[in-house]
Figure 1: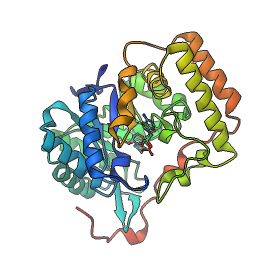
Figure 2: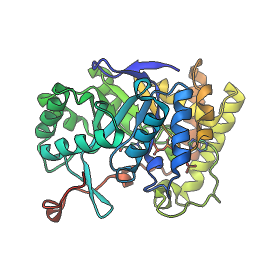
Figure 3: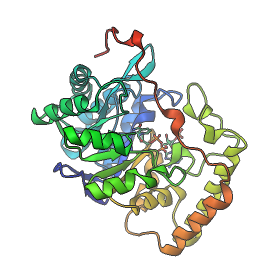
Figure 4: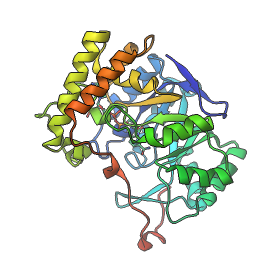
Length: 338
Ligand code: NAP
């Protein structure tokens, strides 16, 4: 397993991180706790030491399951925990909230759910457009000084928002959406990170399963699974992405003798100071992890990938549908979850 430093924080971690959004169940049609714990253990056995979670994933459930897996397996000292701050919720509806008093409440709630005394990487999940970014930044800097967190990251922030944050406090990592099908970060966040010595945690490494190679036009998504409203999974666009995945799968096998998820993750790791966040909720979904290390994509292979994307996807769409709403006036006086 390749490893990487998280900015200048002194935290070092694996270049593949386990994404635990689906483990929380919410927006993924439910979850199974025993399978989830087995998945976390399987990840560590394969050399994955970074676990990315968030309070909002299952409204505390993902963090609690991560905490339980670490406690039961005696794994705390073997892993780096990345969680997030800045999304609150009411009646199952998230909204952005980076107010300093909420940052303080949230860190305590996350530490308790995770059963740890320090968070290795604490990331602002989405920018709160109603709170001055410097106020959130100063609250995080204070937590770092107090030893409650080791490194700071910004997720879903524009470069202007990152600049505003940087005027008030240091940060070490960014977390944009980035995978073969979602490339917007190449225009701004990636070059910004490279220039600033920041580590890039790329989320949705498998584009919500599209790049895992098993989804077909007949695959049914149930319950609150977000893929029921993901514009990439709507026809006629869905067929374009499926055709691209099929062509990439053939390329991966014929040119490199690898699976599609291994190609997709290798591609991310070849782009710069990156970490690929691989979402999984069953141990077998991590089987292809072992195929990622020890090789790189060559120039001709990369060119072939670009040609496939251009040929198959005539109507690309970004993952913007996931953006949570801002705080409403009625959210201000809410008694917050803790
Ligand atoms: P992802 O990694 O793009 O895809 C994960 C899904 O792909 C799995 O749940 C599974 O779907 C399928 N999959 C994975 N491995 C597979 C395999 N070997 N074979 C077949 N299917 C496989 O999705 P993601 O969870 O959205 O993103 C990864 C992580 O990034 C998240 O867990 C989270 O930690 C982070 N993230 C952060 C943000 C943010 O705003 N900061 C947003 C999104 C994600 P099924 O289980 O349904 O089969």
